[in-house]
Image 1 (cartoon, one colour):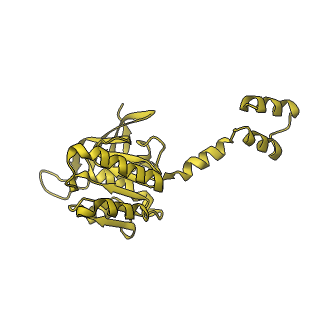
Image 2 (cartoon, helix red, strand yellow):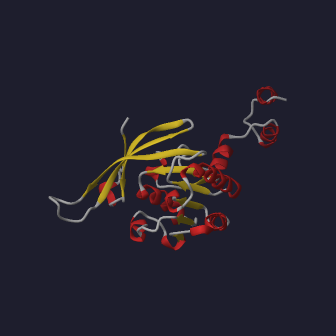
Image 3 (cartoon, rainbow, N blue to C red):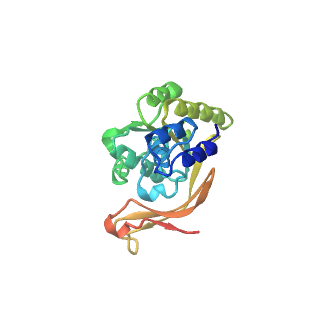
Length: 236
């Protein structure tokens, strides 16, 4: 029986609200309540900060997906913050110049962050081991000696591992299978006056593209209390 036919027959049988028996029949016909669909989607997402949710297709990091973040290490770290704060483990691979203090200021829970500055010749085995133990891997292709022509093949292999393990892979190049692609197209720093003083935050111009979603936004990192509570502004 098709789903529309099942709904029609259930409506004819009784004017009363849908009960447990009717819901069981609808589930058997392939119909699921919206609340169940939302819950199922939520189970497949790792959380991100509310301002970053605005630039991701599902409002979070979809487990099993590959996300390309281009032009900003800060943006990559910011994507790790909420998930690690809520108990997920993350790994950053191939970024020997990563600033741990910067990661902390962006909200990353350092106690749940694994750093692999240089995986060397054991790149694939190291990543395989990480996929078995962490929820998010941020991988930089710049750390490898893999030829540019061979990187798409490596990307496909890593994306397949992420799907199999239900992990999120974040890469710093636009590679096959990456969706969405989040690109930093501009950056400005604020805080110093006339060349003096501490830098307080940076404003990033973000462009995002992916299936069924795209657009631009401005994002301020790191947050500085109420002064930057409205950290995302739609720009068109």
